[in-house]
Length: 384
Image 1 (cartoon, rainbow, N blue to C red):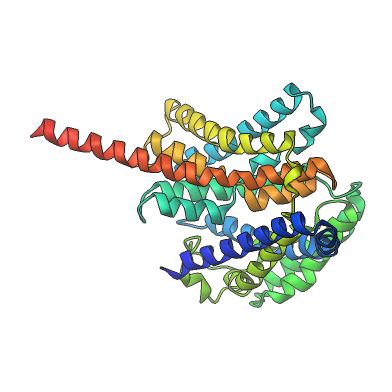
Image 2 (image 1 turned 60 degrees about the vertical axis):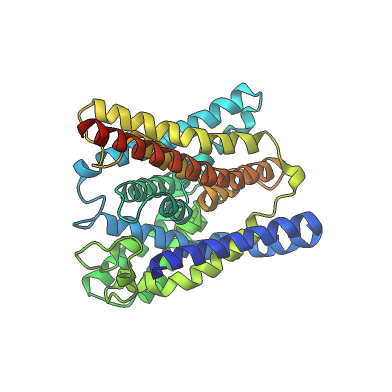
Protein backbone atom coordinates (compact mmCIF):
# COMPACT_ATOMS: atom_id res chain seq x y z
CA UNK A 1 0.00 0.00 0.00
CA UNK A 2 1.38 3.44 -0.93
CA UNK A 3 1.97 5.96 1.82
CA UNK A 4 -0.59 8.46 0.47
CA UNK A 5 -3.32 5.81 0.49
CA UNK A 6 -2.13 4.58 3.89
CA UNK A 7 -2.36 8.17 5.19
CA UNK A 8 -5.95 8.52 3.99
CA UNK A 9 -6.86 5.13 5.42
CA UNK A 10 -5.25 5.97 8.78
CA UNK A 11 -7.04 9.30 8.96
CA UNK A 12 -10.32 7.73 7.97
CA UNK A 13 -9.98 4.91 10.49
CA UNK A 14 -9.24 7.33 13.33
CA UNK A 15 -12.33 9.34 12.46
CA UNK A 16 -14.38 6.14 12.26
CA UNK A 17 -12.96 5.03 15.62
CA UNK A 18 -13.99 8.32 17.23
CA UNK A 19 -17.42 8.08 15.65
CA UNK A 20 -17.94 4.48 16.77
CA UNK A 21 -16.81 5.30 20.31
CA UNK A 22 -19.20 8.27 20.43
CA UNK A 23 -22.17 6.21 19.26
CA UNK A 24 -21.50 3.45 21.79
CA UNK A 25 -20.87 5.91 24.63
CA UNK A 26 -23.90 8.08 23.84
CA UNK A 27 -26.18 5.04 23.91
CA UNK A 28 -24.73 3.38 27.02
CA UNK A 29 -23.81 6.37 29.18
CA UNK A 30 -25.59 9.40 27.75
CA UNK A 31 -25.07 11.60 30.81
CA UNK A 32 -21.30 11.16 31.02
CA UNK A 33 -20.98 11.37 27.23
CA UNK A 34 -22.91 14.64 27.21
CA UNK A 35 -20.53 16.17 29.76
CA UNK A 36 -17.42 15.12 27.82
CA UNK A 37 -18.81 16.14 24.43
CA UNK A 38 -19.78 19.55 25.80
CA UNK A 39 -16.30 20.01 27.30
CA UNK A 40 -14.63 19.10 23.98
CA UNK A 41 -16.94 21.01 21.67
CA UNK A 42 -15.31 24.45 21.67
CA UNK A 43 -11.72 23.21 21.64
CA UNK A 44 -12.37 20.74 18.82
CA UNK A 45 -14.97 22.49 16.63
CA UNK A 46 -13.80 26.09 16.96
CA UNK A 47 -10.04 25.63 17.37
CA UNK A 48 -8.94 22.16 16.27
CA UNK A 49 -10.98 22.16 13.07
CA UNK A 50 -9.17 25.35 12.03
CA UNK A 51 -6.34 23.11 10.87
CA UNK A 52 -8.61 20.61 9.12
CA UNK A 53 -10.08 23.42 7.03
CA UNK A 54 -6.58 24.85 6.61
CA UNK A 55 -5.47 21.58 4.98
CA UNK A 56 -8.60 21.60 2.81
CA UNK A 57 -7.71 25.13 1.67
CA UNK A 58 -4.18 23.98 0.89
CA UNK A 59 -5.57 21.38 -1.51
CA UNK A 60 -7.71 24.03 -3.20
CA UNK A 61 -4.74 26.42 -3.56
CA UNK A 62 -2.51 23.72 -5.05
CA UNK A 63 -5.22 22.68 -7.48
CA UNK A 64 -5.05 26.16 -9.06
CA UNK A 65 -1.31 25.81 -9.86
CA UNK A 66 -0.08 24.88 -13.36
CA UNK A 67 -0.87 21.22 -13.90
CA UNK A 68 -3.56 21.22 -11.22
CA UNK A 69 -7.16 20.31 -11.84
CA UNK A 70 -8.36 23.89 -11.32
CA UNK A 71 -5.56 25.49 -13.37
CA UNK A 72 -7.48 25.39 -16.63
CA UNK A 73 -11.14 26.40 -16.29
CA UNK A 74 -11.86 24.94 -19.73
CA UNK A 75 -10.43 21.51 -18.88
CA UNK A 76 -12.09 21.57 -15.46
CA UNK A 77 -15.42 22.95 -16.67
CA UNK A 78 -17.44 19.71 -16.60
CA UNK A 79 -16.41 18.50 -13.12
CA UNK A 80 -16.72 22.06 -11.76
CA UNK A 81 -20.25 22.39 -13.10
CA UNK A 82 -21.01 18.88 -11.83
CA UNK A 83 -19.75 19.92 -8.38
CA UNK A 84 -22.07 22.94 -8.35
CA UNK A 85 -25.05 20.84 -9.43
CA UNK A 86 -24.01 18.18 -6.92
CA UNK A 87 -24.57 20.80 -4.22
CA UNK A 88 -27.68 22.47 -5.64
CA UNK A 89 -29.64 19.25 -6.28
CA UNK A 90 -29.29 17.76 -2.77
CA UNK A 91 -29.92 21.15 -1.15
CA UNK A 92 -33.10 21.57 -3.21
CA UNK A 93 -34.17 17.98 -2.51
CA UNK A 94 -33.61 18.48 1.22
CA UNK A 95 -35.42 21.81 1.39
CA UNK A 96 -38.30 20.60 -0.76
CA UNK A 97 -38.62 17.47 1.36
CA UNK A 98 -38.64 19.51 4.56
CA UNK A 99 -41.48 21.72 3.29
CA UNK A 100 -43.46 18.85 1.74
CA UNK A 101 -43.23 16.75 4.91
CA UNK A 102 -44.58 19.56 7.06
CA UNK A 103 -41.25 20.39 8.75
CA UNK A 104 -40.26 23.77 7.28
CA UNK A 105 -38.23 24.51 10.43
CA UNK A 106 -35.76 21.86 9.26
CA UNK A 107 -35.11 23.86 6.09
CA UNK A 108 -32.24 25.60 7.87
CA UNK A 109 -30.19 22.44 7.34
CA UNK A 110 -30.32 22.69 3.53
CA UNK A 111 -26.50 22.90 3.24
CA UNK A 112 -25.79 19.71 5.21
CA UNK A 113 -26.19 17.38 2.18
CA UNK A 114 -24.02 19.65 0.02
CA UNK A 115 -20.90 18.19 1.63
CA UNK A 116 -18.45 15.62 0.23
CA UNK A 117 -15.84 13.95 2.41
CA UNK A 118 -12.67 13.99 0.27
CA UNK A 119 -10.79 11.30 2.22
CA UNK A 120 -13.61 8.75 2.30
CA UNK A 121 -14.80 9.39 -1.26
CA UNK A 122 -11.23 9.02 -2.55
CA UNK A 123 -10.75 5.81 -0.59
CA UNK A 124 -13.97 4.32 -2.01
CA UNK A 125 -13.06 5.45 -5.54
CA UNK A 126 -9.72 3.64 -5.25
CA UNK A 127 -11.62 0.47 -4.35
CA UNK A 128 -13.82 0.83 -7.43
CA UNK A 129 -11.57 2.15 -10.21
CA UNK A 130 -8.09 1.08 -11.39
CA UNK A 131 -5.25 3.29 -10.10
CA UNK A 132 -4.94 5.49 -13.20
CA UNK A 133 -8.58 5.59 -14.22
CA UNK A 134 -9.63 9.14 -15.25
CA UNK A 135 -12.69 8.90 -13.01
CA UNK A 136 -10.45 9.36 -9.95
CA UNK A 137 -9.15 12.86 -10.81
CA UNK A 138 -12.71 13.74 -11.93
CA UNK A 139 -13.95 12.81 -8.44
CA UNK A 140 -11.09 14.60 -6.69
CA UNK A 141 -11.72 17.81 -8.63
CA UNK A 142 -15.43 17.56 -7.87
CA UNK A 143 -14.71 17.01 -4.16
CA UNK A 144 -12.19 19.87 -3.96
CA UNK A 145 -14.59 22.27 -5.70
CA UNK A 146 -17.35 21.00 -3.41
CA UNK A 147 -15.24 21.83 -0.35
CA UNK A 148 -14.35 25.28 -1.71
CA UNK A 149 -18.02 26.13 -2.27
CA UNK A 150 -18.88 24.54 1.07
CA UNK A 151 -16.48 26.84 2.93
CA UNK A 152 -18.14 29.82 1.26
CA UNK A 153 -21.60 28.54 2.21
CA UNK A 154 -20.51 27.99 5.81
CA UNK A 155 -19.10 31.51 6.08
CA UNK A 156 -22.08 33.26 4.49
CA UNK A 157 -25.13 31.27 5.61
CA UNK A 158 -24.12 29.84 8.99
CA UNK A 159 -22.70 32.57 11.20
CA UNK A 160 -21.82 31.42 14.70
CA UNK A 161 -23.67 34.34 16.31
CA UNK A 162 -24.90 37.87 15.63
CA UNK A 163 -22.79 39.15 12.73
CA UNK A 164 -20.69 42.28 13.31
CA UNK A 165 -18.82 43.22 10.12
CA UNK A 166 -16.97 46.05 11.88
CA UNK A 167 -15.58 43.77 14.61
CA UNK A 168 -14.64 41.18 12.02
CA UNK A 169 -12.82 43.76 9.87
CA UNK A 170 -11.05 45.19 12.93
CA UNK A 171 -9.05 41.98 13.23
CA UNK A 172 -9.31 40.53 9.72
CA UNK A 173 -7.67 43.50 7.99
CA UNK A 174 -4.53 43.26 10.20
CA UNK A 175 -4.56 39.45 9.70
CA UNK A 176 -4.45 39.81 5.93
CA UNK A 177 -1.85 42.58 6.18
CA UNK A 178 0.40 40.40 8.36
CA UNK A 179 0.04 37.46 5.95
CA UNK A 180 0.89 39.74 3.00
CA UNK A 181 3.97 41.13 4.77
CA UNK A 182 5.16 37.63 5.68
CA UNK A 183 4.86 36.59 2.05
CA UNK A 184 6.61 39.74 0.79
CA UNK A 185 9.49 39.10 3.19
CA UNK A 186 9.71 35.52 1.93
CA UNK A 187 9.21 34.03 5.40
CA UNK A 188 9.61 30.27 4.91
CA UNK A 189 8.25 29.02 8.23
CA UNK A 190 4.51 28.53 8.56
CA UNK A 191 4.26 29.30 12.29
CA UNK A 192 4.23 33.12 11.85
CA UNK A 193 1.30 32.71 9.47
CA UNK A 194 -0.53 30.50 11.95
CA UNK A 195 0.27 32.31 15.21
CA UNK A 196 0.20 35.92 14.01
CA UNK A 197 -2.09 36.16 10.98
CA UNK A 198 -4.15 33.10 11.93
CA UNK A 199 -4.81 34.29 15.47
CA UNK A 200 -5.97 37.71 14.25
CA UNK A 201 -8.20 36.03 11.68
CA UNK A 202 -9.66 33.71 14.33
CA UNK A 203 -10.47 36.64 16.62
CA UNK A 204 -12.05 38.56 13.75
CA UNK A 205 -14.33 35.66 12.82
CA UNK A 206 -15.14 34.76 16.43
CA UNK A 207 -15.94 38.30 17.56
CA UNK A 208 -17.62 39.11 14.26
CA UNK A 209 -20.08 36.22 14.64
CA UNK A 210 -18.68 34.06 11.84
CA UNK A 211 -17.39 30.52 12.32
CA UNK A 212 -13.81 30.70 13.67
CA UNK A 213 -12.96 27.26 12.25
CA UNK A 214 -12.46 29.08 8.93
CA UNK A 215 -9.66 31.23 10.36
CA UNK A 216 -6.88 29.84 8.15
CA UNK A 217 -8.95 29.84 4.95
CA UNK A 218 -7.98 33.44 4.03
CA UNK A 219 -4.42 33.01 5.37
CA UNK A 220 -3.25 29.77 3.72
CA UNK A 221 -3.26 31.24 0.16
CA UNK A 222 -0.56 33.72 1.27
CA UNK A 223 1.87 30.94 2.25
CA UNK A 224 4.71 30.62 -0.23
CA UNK A 225 4.46 27.52 -2.41
CA UNK A 226 6.12 25.84 -5.35
CA UNK A 227 4.98 26.79 -8.83
CA UNK A 228 4.28 23.15 -9.70
CA UNK A 229 1.21 21.15 -8.74
CA UNK A 230 1.53 18.15 -6.42
CA UNK A 231 -1.05 15.40 -6.62
CA UNK A 232 -3.49 15.72 -3.72
CA UNK A 233 -1.97 12.75 -1.90
CA UNK A 234 1.54 12.76 -3.38
CA UNK A 235 4.20 11.51 -0.97
CA UNK A 236 6.55 14.23 -2.28
CA UNK A 237 4.53 16.84 -0.38
CA UNK A 238 5.81 15.31 2.86
CA UNK A 239 9.34 16.43 1.94
CA UNK A 240 8.67 19.67 0.04
CA UNK A 241 10.58 22.73 1.28
CA UNK A 242 7.96 25.41 0.52
CA UNK A 243 5.90 26.95 3.30
CA UNK A 244 2.54 25.57 2.17
CA UNK A 245 3.68 21.95 2.06
CA UNK A 246 5.66 22.29 5.30
CA UNK A 247 2.41 23.40 6.91
CA UNK A 248 0.58 20.42 5.42
CA UNK A 249 3.29 17.90 6.35
CA UNK A 250 3.48 19.14 9.97
CA UNK A 251 -0.27 19.21 10.58
CA UNK A 252 -1.22 15.91 8.92
CA UNK A 253 -0.70 13.79 12.04
CA UNK A 254 -2.20 16.29 14.54
CA UNK A 255 -5.25 16.66 12.30
CA UNK A 256 -5.73 12.88 12.48
CA UNK A 257 -6.01 13.23 16.27
CA UNK A 258 -8.30 16.26 15.85
CA UNK A 259 -10.61 14.24 13.60
CA UNK A 260 -10.65 11.43 16.16
CA UNK A 261 -11.80 13.94 18.79
CA UNK A 262 -14.19 15.53 16.30
CA UNK A 263 -15.92 12.20 15.80
CA UNK A 264 -15.98 11.62 19.56
CA UNK A 265 -17.43 15.08 20.32
CA UNK A 266 -19.98 15.28 17.51
CA UNK A 267 -21.14 11.82 16.42
CA UNK A 268 -22.64 10.67 19.71
CA UNK A 269 -26.25 10.39 18.63
CA UNK A 270 -28.81 8.29 20.54
CA UNK A 271 -30.24 5.66 18.22
CA UNK A 272 -33.66 6.90 19.28
CA UNK A 273 -32.69 10.28 17.79
CA UNK A 274 -33.70 9.24 14.28
CA UNK A 275 -36.20 11.74 12.90
CA UNK A 276 -37.35 13.51 9.74
CA UNK A 277 -34.00 15.28 9.33
CA UNK A 278 -32.27 11.87 9.25
CA UNK A 279 -34.07 10.77 6.11
CA UNK A 280 -33.89 14.21 4.53
CA UNK A 281 -30.10 14.38 4.89
CA UNK A 282 -29.48 10.76 3.89
CA UNK A 283 -31.79 10.87 0.87
CA UNK A 284 -30.45 14.22 -0.30
CA UNK A 285 -26.86 12.93 -0.17
CA UNK A 286 -27.42 9.45 -1.59
CA UNK A 287 -30.00 10.44 -4.23
CA UNK A 288 -29.57 14.18 -4.79
CA UNK A 289 -25.79 14.22 -5.14
CA UNK A 290 -25.51 11.65 -7.98
CA UNK A 291 -28.63 13.09 -9.63
CA UNK A 292 -27.13 16.57 -9.80
CA UNK A 293 -23.72 15.30 -10.96
CA UNK A 294 -25.13 13.12 -13.78
CA UNK A 295 -27.69 15.64 -15.03
CA UNK A 296 -25.17 18.51 -15.15
CA UNK A 297 -22.54 16.34 -16.85
CA UNK A 298 -25.09 15.40 -19.51
CA UNK A 299 -26.21 19.03 -19.91
CA UNK A 300 -22.59 20.21 -20.20
CA UNK A 301 -21.89 17.58 -22.87
CA UNK A 302 -24.96 18.70 -24.85
CA UNK A 303 -23.72 22.28 -24.58
CA UNK A 304 -20.47 21.31 -26.30
CA UNK A 305 -18.20 20.60 -23.32
CA UNK A 306 -16.45 17.25 -23.30
CA UNK A 307 -16.42 14.65 -20.55
CA UNK A 308 -12.90 13.55 -19.58
CA UNK A 309 -11.69 10.85 -21.97
CA UNK A 310 -12.42 7.36 -20.68
CA UNK A 311 -15.18 8.45 -18.26
CA UNK A 312 -18.55 6.97 -19.23
CA UNK A 313 -21.93 8.06 -17.94
CA UNK A 314 -21.93 4.92 -15.82
CA UNK A 315 -18.66 6.09 -14.28
CA UNK A 316 -20.18 9.54 -13.70
CA UNK A 317 -23.08 7.94 -11.82
CA UNK A 318 -20.62 5.98 -9.67
CA UNK A 319 -18.65 9.20 -9.03
CA UNK A 320 -21.80 11.05 -8.01
CA UNK A 321 -22.83 8.28 -5.64
CA UNK A 322 -19.33 8.15 -4.14
CA UNK A 323 -19.44 11.92 -3.62
CA UNK A 324 -22.61 11.35 -1.60
CA UNK A 325 -20.46 10.29 1.36
CA UNK A 326 -20.78 13.50 3.36
CA UNK A 327 -19.66 12.40 6.82
CA UNK A 328 -17.01 14.81 8.24
CA UNK A 329 -18.13 18.03 6.58
CA UNK A 330 -21.82 17.06 6.81
CA UNK A 331 -21.44 16.54 10.57
CA UNK A 332 -19.75 19.92 10.87
CA UNK A 333 -22.48 21.64 8.85
CA UNK A 334 -25.11 19.98 11.04
CA UNK A 335 -23.57 21.42 14.21
CA UNK A 336 -23.51 24.84 12.53
CA UNK A 337 -27.10 24.60 11.27
CA UNK A 338 -28.95 23.39 14.37
CA UNK A 339 -28.64 23.98 18.12
CA UNK A 340 -28.39 21.00 20.45
CA UNK A 341 -31.61 19.02 20.41
CA UNK A 342 -33.64 16.46 18.46
CA UNK A 343 -33.17 18.17 15.07
CA UNK A 344 -29.38 18.18 15.44
CA UNK A 345 -29.32 14.52 16.57
CA UNK A 346 -31.49 13.49 13.63
CA UNK A 347 -29.38 15.47 11.12
CA UNK A 348 -26.19 13.90 12.47
CA UNK A 349 -27.67 10.45 12.06
CA UNK A 350 -28.43 11.32 8.45
CA UNK A 351 -24.81 12.36 7.92
CA UNK A 352 -23.68 9.03 9.37
CA UNK A 353 -26.11 7.11 7.16
CA UNK A 354 -24.48 8.69 4.10
CA UNK A 355 -21.92 5.89 4.54
CA UNK A 356 -24.50 3.72 2.77
CA UNK A 357 -23.36 5.45 -0.42
CA UNK A 358 -20.07 3.52 -0.19
CA UNK A 359 -21.37 -0.06 -0.62
CA UNK A 360 -23.93 1.18 -3.17
CA UNK A 361 -21.15 2.85 -5.18
CA UNK A 362 -18.93 -0.24 -4.98
CA UNK A 363 -21.77 -2.50 -6.15
CA UNK A 364 -22.72 -0.11 -8.96
CA UNK A 365 -19.07 0.25 -9.96
CA UNK A 366 -18.71 -3.51 -10.36
CA UNK A 367 -21.89 -3.62 -12.43
CA UNK A 368 -20.68 -0.80 -14.70
CA UNK A 369 -17.27 -2.44 -15.07
CA UNK A 370 -18.84 -5.81 -15.89
CA UNK A 371 -21.18 -4.25 -18.45
CA UNK A 372 -18.28 -2.39 -20.08
CA UNK A 373 -16.25 -5.61 -20.30
CA UNK A 374 -19.20 -7.44 -21.88
CA UNK A 375 -19.62 -4.67 -24.46
CA UNK A 376 -15.90 -4.77 -25.31
CA UNK A 377 -16.01 -8.55 -25.78
CA UNK A 378 -19.10 -8.19 -27.98
CA UNK A 379 -17.36 -5.60 -30.18
CA UNK A 380 -14.28 -7.82 -30.45
CA UNK A 381 -16.39 -10.78 -31.64
CA UNK A 382 -18.28 -8.65 -34.16
CA UNK A 383 -15.02 -7.26 -35.57
CA UNK A 384 -13.56 -10.77 -35.77
